[in-house]
Length: 157
Image 1 (tube, one colour):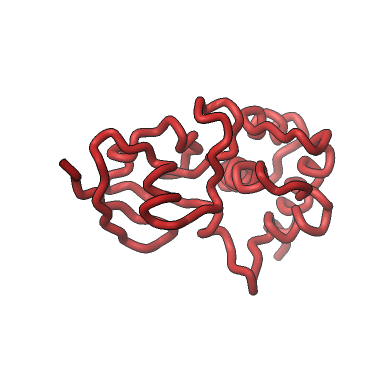
Image 2 (cartoon, rainbow, N blue to C red; image 1 turned 135 degrees about the vertical axis):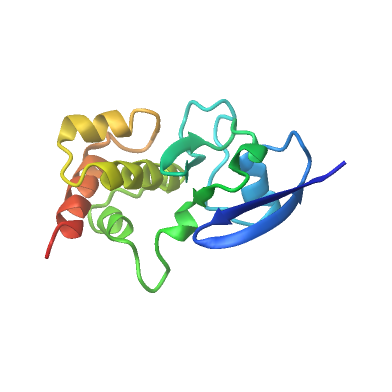
């Protein structure tokens, strides 16, 4: 028997029907057709499925969807638009921090959550925030540089 789930998604109120055991990733990708959040390991280890729920990062591949009832959920689709990128997205593009792109949505969301709490993170703090996100294409240098650059852009008057 399906249940109704109501929450705020990327600033908009939504109500969906879902199975009681549905995972947040499945609701986002299959029910709401938001495919930016990726299915990676399915075990909460790779970070490709990272989204933000009430200001905290969660691995949506293991997060029960019912837990977002009346919550604020932010996915990569809510960061910016094709026409107007969020400074993090712009910085990732400019610094070459996007290679195959599979991990990028999760990296962006973890970075965004960090920058919401810490306006000027140092390299150690960035590495800690990204510790749950795996990338097989880079050595993370460009990603860390992109987060530092975005922090500077966001702090400009």
